Amino acid sequence: MAYEVLARKWRPARFDQVVGQEAVTRTLSNALVSGRVAHAFLFSGVRGVGKTTTARILAKCLNCHQGISAEPCDECVSCTEIAEARSVDVQEVDAASNTGVDNIREIRESVRYGTSRDRHKIFIIDEVHMLSKGAFNALLKTLEEPPPHVKFILCTTEMHRIPVTITSRCQQHDFKPIAFATIFERLRLICEKEGVQISDFGLHAVAEAAKGSMRDAQSVLDKMVALGGNSVGDEDVSALLGLVDEKVLGSLVAAIAERNRESLLARIQQVADEGIGAIELCHKLLEHVRNLLVAKVAGWDTGLIHIGESHKDEFLRQAKLFSRLDLLRFYDLLAQVSTDLRLHPHPAVHLEMALMKLVELAGLPELEEVIGRLNSGSLEPAPVVSSVATAKSAAAPETSVPVEKKTPAGFAQGRSPEKQATREAPPDSKPSGGSLEEQLIARLQQNHVALHSLLEHASRIGFSPESLKVEFPSTERSFFKMVDTPETRNLLTELCAKICGSEPSVEISIREGSRRKQESDPTEDSKVQQ
Image (cartoon, rainbow, N blue to C red; front, side, top):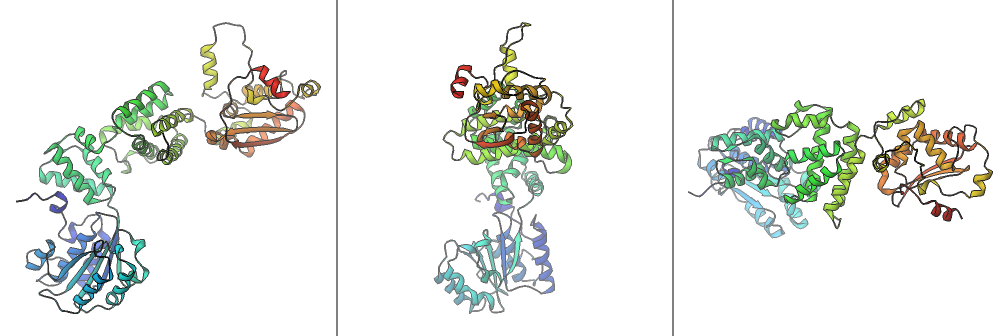
């Protein structure tokens, strides 16, 4: 006997076997019991959720030789032939290959005659959205007033393509995507009955790959059994589905949390060597970040995280490494990168740079916290160490002689030496000496470290008694949003007033440009001023 795939072997034969569609099956059962059966039905929903299967069960209920009921006998000739799709009085029409008006005319001609043997003549039209406009128009009158012995069951995966004139003539039932837990338990039952040994990790992976489709889940499981036999290992599952191991994702997250850039680059290369593409890795990271946020907000036991129990402890440990704001920033950046990767000429490099950005985003203080500390005027040095300061301290020799700081090029533009010489002394000249930009930077370093760290990502800062202009490149949009607030503007205005004796206008903008250099050549500054 020829092999029968799992999707056909385990196809439901009764309403109580259809999982995940309880509302639809209960409605149809009650209609059969009460005798309130419509003349036309429209079943809509994604692929593999039970539309055609339910249509066949409904046809068996209507034509069962033991009478119309919600529980067909599955033993009579009519039930057997309908289950095998070879009944004379139940015709299954594939609208994808029968799209024209002539095909509908054949149905209209067949409707005029009685049944060959059974109680009702039933037409199951699958993928009905593929019919042409003329075919829909030819079906309208017959669909609205068919003979008493005729029933229509239309099935579609694209409800929006069905004309309103058709939907208004049918009793519509919407089939929902099947829940992850329901698919998981169904696969476990099938494996027990079939004698297949597979871990919860494998079942989780198959259920996740199905995306709400029970037929897809059973087809993937069939492929797993074909690869590994009756004992399917986790390695077989990962190889067949091209999965990114949770340990690999965990190592990437750990490198980001530890701000270990070298380790992060090594892990990315390891994933690439295993044949996992940049787009797939980005999608898996998006899911991982989402699961981390759910674990942090709602906890593990909510059933919202589709990860095996064996990874629970490590996963919860990862969730503690980041704040909710960190994870939201990560998700926003990865979502944008996921869109860009499809058009980028070098997707692997683009994703690599994006993950390096995650290292910079990790550990930034929350905006509300920064604003509160700025308003109170008692902002203590933040625990986040500037990458510029870290690089300078690592390169500087061990000596007690203070090193003179040079001002970045973007901080010293827009004023001539004459104006600097004739400028009045500021009312509060605590960090005296140097240009206006240098004095502003000095005050920020002393009293407002968090704001100074944010402004380090600006491409240009120009300060004169009339105006303070801060420009960010388009690549630093997140830092621009954190700085561009009324509270920050007020603080900068107060600091500038203490330095130059007047309140300049504050302009914070974003434009295309590279990030400013960390140090500038004084000779080049003089050239710009001239």
